[in-house]
Length: 330
Length: 269
View 1 (cartoon, rainbow over the protein chains, first blue to last red):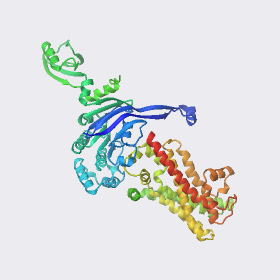
View 2: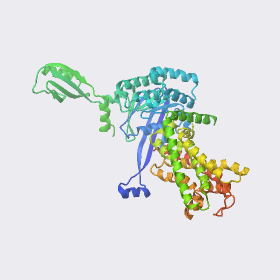
View 3: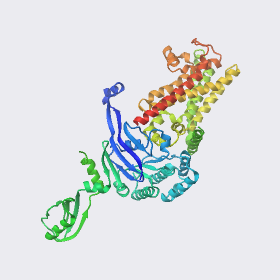
View 4: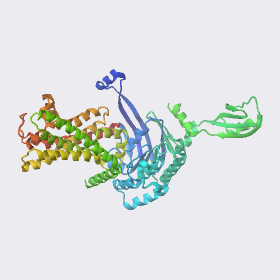
């Protein structure tokens, strides 16, 4: 395995002009410019191997897109080292971007009034893709993404899901080694999301394309990402697998029990009742201190039980907890 | 270089094909511009009917200036559509520039090819018509030198206006609010040049002589073409400064544009 991305002590600071409010404030804005420094990316270090599929997560304004923009060569870092594909992205932009692909979910790279196929053909020229490779890739993506029905439709008339599929195809026609996806499933329905995920997975597995994915949809993360980077306030809070997140932070599990009788008082050692609705009761217990089978054993000793279900914490809730309770800051 | 030209024509081709889909909008726009031009010119004609001439310039002589400015501005507005500060600033904020920067081709060529507003042909044709009528009605003593100099004047004007557009577009990297100030120079400048410059107040004239030397772009060349005396007593080579000013402004604009792109990459927006 070879390293494709090397990020060391990466920093990006912005100077933002302070705005004074009100009539006199507007007047002052004309003459005095007070600046404050925003540390959008503050000393981040990580490495990514070729062929990895990594989720880059964080709340809005955490510094995700600033990092992606630096990785894609659109922004020059304030300080730190950044080597992608063996070169420094922002230097010699034209050579660098020829080997990466990017899809920014909300925007299209295609020409608005052109039929999809003509946009793709123009990209063939822009990226100087050999004709046979272009044809091979196109027919493969056409089948995988089901582009056939709308290849001749102008981009402006596509649905969001169709547009996203067309954009994915456009980002991959030149066989990039690295693919940046920013919110690739935003605004799509469940079926469309699933199709996009399968495609991303296929590209990653079959072609060995390294994928960096930012998303707010935790199902994307759960289904796709082997590795997760979490960033907030410009700092990298977590770097590891989803399983590690679950183990470390998904502490509380729930046991839902339907009792056979109406017990006026229900309690059990090691668990707390969080919800009670007639004969249905939800217990909360710690993963570290109690196993589900011990808890069930203790309950069956005291009560008659009809049905039960153990609920794992959802990764979405877990990650939200990481952001909100700042579990990783120390 | 060849690749750049080839890319440019392909991108322009896209623009043409796209805009042909909106034929009605095209014709309505041409109609609108025609009406506006005719109205403006009719107002001018009424003024002349009342006063006979303005500062020694007859109606047809002013029509010569007017036609030149209209046609040259139209050509610029067509070729430099992508740099129109209003639109460019908006595109930058929509992330469109980032999309273009992700492609492995020259960014300036892409901006030139990102917009090509065919409707501007309306303005160009009207400008040329007015110019043709003016040339037909003024008694110009044509020489070889004058004939050859006409396209130079025209191109210099196009370059000058184009340079202003590029400077305006570049400024939007820093601030989008002051775009109106830039428009004053571009649109106000073209408006000013449609009239003989000697009618303006001393300070204003000096501004357009020494700060933004627009006076050499059309007023002095027109004096030369129309064989009119120079009331401002400038050196005799003044009419021939137009290419220096025109291409010079465009060159400076290119340098500034590249500087602005560098700034954009280091700060984003």
